[in-house]
Amino acid sequence: MPSPVMTVSHLGKRYGSTVAVKDVSFDIQPGEIFGLIGPNGAGKTTTMECVEGLRRPDRGQITVLGLDPQRDAAELRTRIGVQHQEAHLQKRIKVWEAVDLWASLYAEVADTDVLLSQLGLNAKRNAWFVNLSGGQKQRLFIALALIHGPEVLFLDELTTGLDPQARHAIWDLIRHIRDRGTTIFLTTHLMEEAERLCDRVGIIEHGELIEIGTPAALVAKHCPERSVIFTSDEPDVAERVQSVPAVTSVEHNGSTYTLRGEGEDFVTDVINAIAHQSIRIKGFRTETPTLEEVFLKLTGHGFRD
Amino acid sequence: MLRGFWKLTWVETKVFLREPLGVIGSLGIPVIIFIVLGRAQGSRTLGNEAMGEAPFNLPILAALFIALGAAVSLVAIISLYREGGFLKRLRATPLSPVTILGAHVFVKLVLTVVGLALLTLVGRRFLPGAMDVDLLSFTAALLLSTVSILSLGFVIASLVPTARFAQPIGTGLLYPMIAVSGLFFPLEQLPPAIRVVAYGLPTTHAVSLMQGVWDGAGWGAHWVSVVALILIFGVCTGLSTKVFRWE
Image (tube, rainbow over all chains, first blue to last red; front, side, top):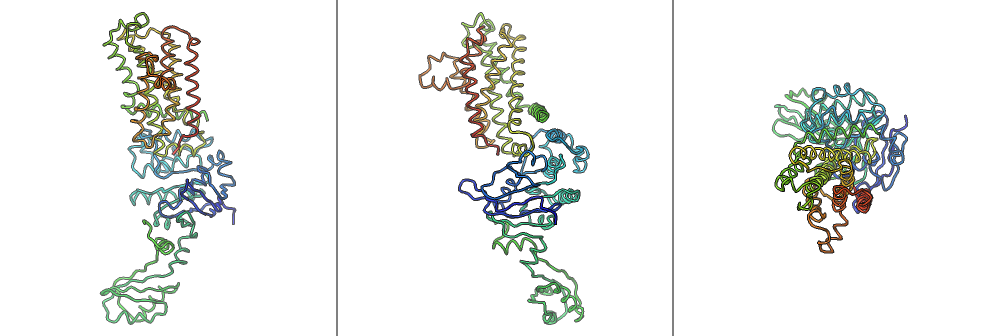
């Protein structure tokens, strides 16, 4: 395994008497999209800003690209790109002016025209920041973060407040950036975003990292139960599928049957049983638990509590 | 990062000019006050010879308005940028914090010079004799005063809780300083307690220095005001580095 792009170990940070981050440790590997997920106030942003060198941690060690974010702040800033939560530019700065300003701050910069077209902002070059849509603003912030070809990109709550269409467009964009070799560290409180975008996620709550892994592995570990839901008008269906070994429960509501069970063969076993019994079914679908359910199980409360 | 400094300065200038209310407030109001009051006073009471008859030196008042307007606008911009996360975002670039704030000060100083040039042009056109002064020396005095007042602006910008209150708090704290600046009544007539406060304010020394330049006295004759303005600048800048909030 190549050495990690960043290593955070036993990070701690408090503001006055409020503990924002208690004890957080994780590594991020080159070329991966790593997401820190958790509710608002869990310590995601504080952790990210300590890694970026914008905040001085009280405890713990951080290494990014082999650098100390505090001691080597100047070099680090030329090698990372950041996007902050709910950020604004000057209301009446034009898109091209913002890009031009940012380009003047770095010794080496990407071709800004290419960057603007890649982010779909070419038509908005002369628009004022205040007149951009939410999605356009976020794409502009991504452009500013990418202008110097950073090795690591930090994205804090990137799609919060965007409509689903804009959100999907941004996810595609992030995948493209990763495919070109940039490592991405993001925070989100949207479980769907974490599940669809991140290679690995860390779940943070009350300043502590309580779980880390790929979304699929976390689901398999904490919520192994699967469901098969089908509809059938035939009689005695419940009894006829009850005998499948992997099935732990059968519920039905009219002609809709919900079978729950665990194990990798559960769905196959159910399909085989249905075929074997020659049950005519009208609809069939499976349900896999999501990260949201993993979170609920781990913390005992819902995500927007 | 000199390139970043000029770029930021140029962008801030353009952004400022696109905000009509800001331009009117910073440049229009002092000029309007100058003309309206100048006409009311009658141009014969203006200028060097007739200074004794005038209730106060109008060009100095207008110049002070320019400097204070620049400071209020600085307070408003800083708090707005802070609240919008713009200052924090810039700090995540290689640009140094001093450069970021320096660009803002520079824009305000340019604005001050432009404002004074406008006063001069308008004065020559509408109020003959109103701006008969060593302009170079007067500009230098105004710039030194503005730097000192702007540094106080940074302290105020650090104390303002939210961008919403920046404009009213800045206005409420800065403009009343004119009242005790010695422009309208001699400082000796003020109650002792207020006099002490007045001597701590940059406007008081700004008026004294500009009045001195107006009367034709050299800077040497007003070294106390010069030292006081520099001292206030030093203290306020030192204080700002301690209390300034970037977010």
